[in-house]
Length: 231
Image (spheres, one colour):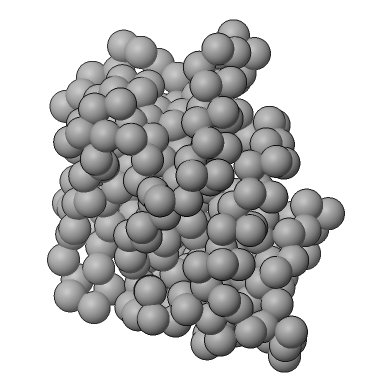
């Protein structure tokens, strides 16, 4: 596996990723979306907990300008509804990022390089890739109460997204997506503790959004399998 923090944004956006990964990910994510069982990897859980606890203890150092604690929950519900998704789709078939359609604390400037290294080792063991895999940080999101991110696809970056998300209370936050195979809205509620979700960005656009009634901290990663590369 290649863990490449030196990749530039342009490198990532312009890279072509193989549709067949030649790894166990081909079976773990047969369609567009899957949850992964990584809870038994104690090194990973310890690394995630360390990063989460640092954030909780250093909130004053983070960018809180994009978080409005007084936003109305009913307004968020409308933003994340199927009817609003259909309106967005009519205007933009891909909507790569949510942009200002979000309410969150941002910490994308914090690298957590050791956590990325630990995750790379975990994925090497779980996925047994036979082609080069690139792992890069993508998406650092803290959703306090009534935090959310609106509908978007991430379809401008090929490969997969992996999100490690923590919430202290079950059934108080979710990842919602439009299943391209059925055209139905699916809501994946968080369990208490760490939740691991993976989805493709290089097939049909996977529209998705996030909402939380509690403190939900999420570490996001991109996974790419460059074409014509073998180990």
